[in-house]
Length: 323
Ligand code: ADP
Ligand code: MG
Image (cartoon, rainbow, N blue to C red; front, side):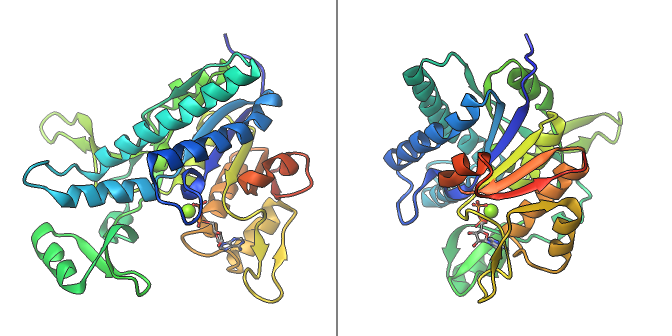
């Protein structure tokens, strides 16, 4: 039975599962998941229907590294499968931590993780311009070899070595949107679209004109997928948790200023004025704007530690849509 509670979509940053400076061990993931689970209880206590999304950068990076180790013995897996693997592993760890926290508090709600496929446009120009560095660092020599033998696009990454670049096209549709929404509206806590979702495109059969979904070598920005999902499940509130309490203008400059509350027009202006860095804060702001422009009511960017204060309105950066 569907309830009448508002739905919140909450996106967890890539480092939510690993504390700064720690290795991504299973124990570390469990510690981080326990912490997130207890923070999420703020939203449970406020009777939100909840959809949780999360990043997977460090975890998928390690799977890519594993791929390189003994390819003769263990066949390499493509990127779409690796994303599915992290949705499964992080979903399980998160799910277990939330179930345990709910049990401790005597709250009767169910938790489910959805393996989530996200449709991309195969003609998206991003496929011709790989832009997202992923996985291990290589020497210049190795990079040339990989370029030659695997047809990988390689680029130097901020003086740290050479990395593989993959396309990062815009997400069009979440295939599992209906089951995610149905489960959330029944009060089940849903973990979905981990790592931005599994990238798939429609492959048309030239003879019949029919199509099949096929996985592709790409990664999808988790903030953009989260806002798409927030729209598709009719969320009222969209929260992005990252490692800053607030969004700033003139970030990292002597006159930096934290932002408290913004409407769509102010947000657009600051975005146009270049206050939000590409690849980090900019996609979050774009995701928030996309949500608000499609009738989303409220969005919030803050850190996990400050979620409670932000929900009380005394911290975080709040965004309001047109009412
Ligand atoms: P996540 O894993 O949560 O997606 P990111 O590193 O991609 O984290 O994005 C968060 C980072 O964005 C912050 O740590 C901060 O360094 C950076 N950032 C860039 N521009 C701004 C800004 N204008 N205000 C606040 N943080 C910003
Ligand atoms: Mg990010």
